[in-house]
Image (cartoon, rainbow over all chains, first blue to last red; front, side, top):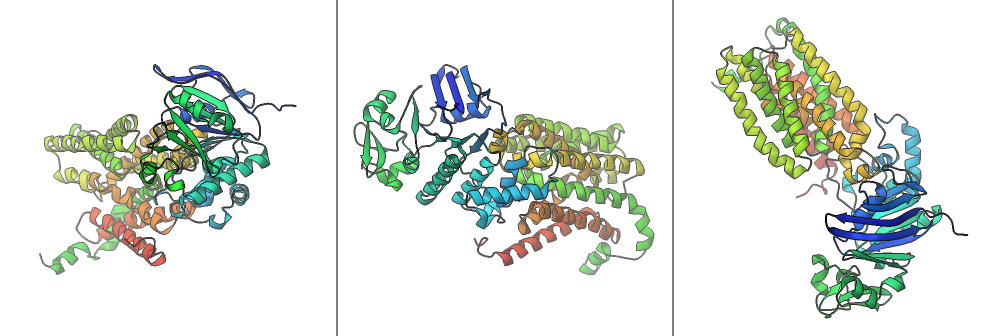
Length: 285
Length: 285
């Protein structure tokens, strides 16, 4: 028996003016499923996340979470955003940031301190962040902060975790650790994960399906179905080669002169050491 | 004037007991102001709005000067001035960068308007200067009532929006996704800030509002990252500066402002020193 899908897109379309990001999107994400969303900058990956958060509306079609239309601020949805440094003008400790995920939307000042504190301890334990619970967020590394983000997102016991480039600007070790935490939580709770990323390799062991957005079109399928030379070349309308190197996926533009990360987008920080060497992906090789 | 004269002018405790009752209104107003400045300073710091506060203060000064010119109530005038400035900044300057340039444009215009109104005013010249640099005995019963009401409104409003405002200030992306109305909150905050600035101007003057609205919170954040402790310290520091400043000013024949700003600044220096001793590694340049 197939359980009820957690996220359902029905003939969804999103456009800015005459520029169509994607249309005719039919997608069902099941409990426990891990969906990777790839595509170049400007292909509508973040907008895709936002339609499920209720902060961006579709132009046509519908999207529903757990059988109900998307509602902003719903507990069914948890967001893990890009890592963004906190300045020392933010007087919050790690535990205070997580606590905001529990009751930060409620008015007034926090009165149920003890109950919230117990819940925070539980969440920190879950993501392996108990060791720095009382340190200032501005003192924490990017990887430590992203663990807190995961704890914060899990606070509402969401049915789907939306991850918007949570690995960006983390080093390889932390990329793997954060991916593992997210995957582990999803498996344990039976919640779905929708994971927007530039770099598929750290999450490759966990991905069930890939949604690849490019040039106003998309392709949906398993990793092996989507991450192929023919499929990506067709999506981009230009020759693109997909290589497998040591269990990693490398996407290279057709003339072989440049190595691209698997989203086909050329990043300045990635292009440096990788330029001219198609079988590496810069710092991640 | 030699140094002994300066000391004589700055600290002369003869007749202190006689003078004290004369400033009881100022002391009460100052105490209320300490609470307002200590509390709102936390959010001004978190939202990185020091410059905007300065801009609001200059338009508030223009409003007060206009009220003086037409013989209306000065507190009301400065409330109108700062509300107008806050509305403009709230509507146009949602992003920090826009806000800074708009503030930069508004500020000299406000100051210019204020100077125009003051030069047209033919009353006592002490009143003129007081709006810019603060006054000590000028608080009459009616004004005191107005300032207490304004302070109470500010404190109550902050208490009502405390948690979501903290969330929105520290972490706007996630707060927005979780359903906090971040743009609405930011307009409300601007209004509350406008009232706080209008009250502060009555005691320390338009040019020196930052000494009470920023410095205490900034000092508190140097020594604490625990939310509750930071708030308490910030209020205590603001009280020390304003009440201490008024009491000291009474002993000399100088205006109140230098005392307030100096105490405030010294507290900040001490906090930085404490921080440097505690964690020298973090703050080595």
